[in-house]
Image (cartoon, rainbow, N blue to C red; front, side, top):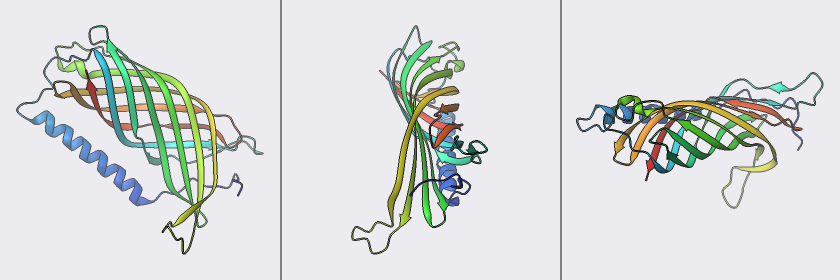
Amino acid sequence: MKATASSPLRSIDPGTRNRSRLMMILGLALMLGMLGSQDARALKPHERDGVLFGVAFGFSPGKVSMFPGEEGGAVSSDWEIGVTPQLRLGYTFFKNRLGISLVGQQWLYEQGVLAEDKLRINVQNLALAFNYYPGNPQSMAAGIHFEGGVGLANARITILEPVEDDPHGNKFEEIFKEDEGGTSYHIGLGYEFRIMPSVAAGLMVSYVYQTIGEEIFDEASSVPVNVTLNWYW
């Protein structure tokens, strides 16, 4: 099946949106509870020089521009809510001030509907990111950090159709999938606080832009809002 310019990215399952928001609310509630505890470590000096491993999860409004070669120009979607898992591996140095990381992040939009088919858009980026921590390591401002990065982007569209009487119990089968690559850029602002001597939790807001410029995908943008958890050693 060939994707066409009429393929809509206009609808999303309300359950997907609600689950994403619920997870974000629970994450924020957990962070506030930790900050409010009598033994809160947020006021203790940050000691983050060394290897870093981090995970993050949240939600993101995102949009894609598709079919740039069509008459009349590319077709852009509305801003839709997707989920944004993230992994990072890096190193921090220069007296807790600087960091460099390899960051893998994606924006996953699912449950879009084209007729009776299921539509899935997955935009990923693998970026080299640089962090700057401007605050005094001895104060609460130590948790503030800025991030910027550039890397490789991959955009995938998958279309699945309903199946009946599948022996494996599958409700959908894949009928179309296409990957296209490009370049990604992102900037971010975050805050983290210590919850254990070598572990910090936080919140980060980013803007991610991917330029693809291929037959199906032209460009993509997303604004991830992620709860973060980082280990330093």
